[in-house]
Amino acid sequence: MNAHGDVASVPLRPRTNVSPLSFRFHLPGYANACWQWLIRCVSLMVRKMSPEKIRAFPIDRQVFLVREVAAKLGNLHGETATSFWRAKASELLDLVVGSGRDRTAAGDEVRRFFLAVQREMSAGTVAEAMPILSA
Image (cartoon, rainbow, N blue to C red):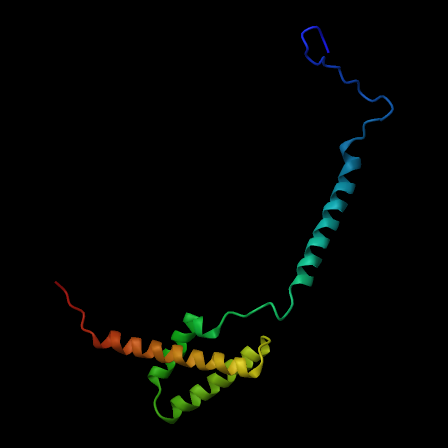
């Protein structure tokens, strides 16, 4: 302390026993440490992700697919429409089961998709039946 009660600053002396290393000696070690850190992060993420925790996007909410099937079914009638729907339902069931769902849950999802297609078809016919009025 000095006469005024302040802590006197002591000048820092450089360490004389340590020779400064150039940047090129630090770069490989730094790159290796970053690489090891990245590998640890990725392996931790992979361990935390399991098939039970990953869920595919529900097919009844895939608007493009719902509209595509509704448009095709809207143009088909009778046995042709029935065979198209059976083939599409079988294809979707295999797709959902292949994504890791059990067969019962996959069947429920295909049924929800069918209801979404029916809603889209009824919304399309209602929209077509309404006249467009102009002022």
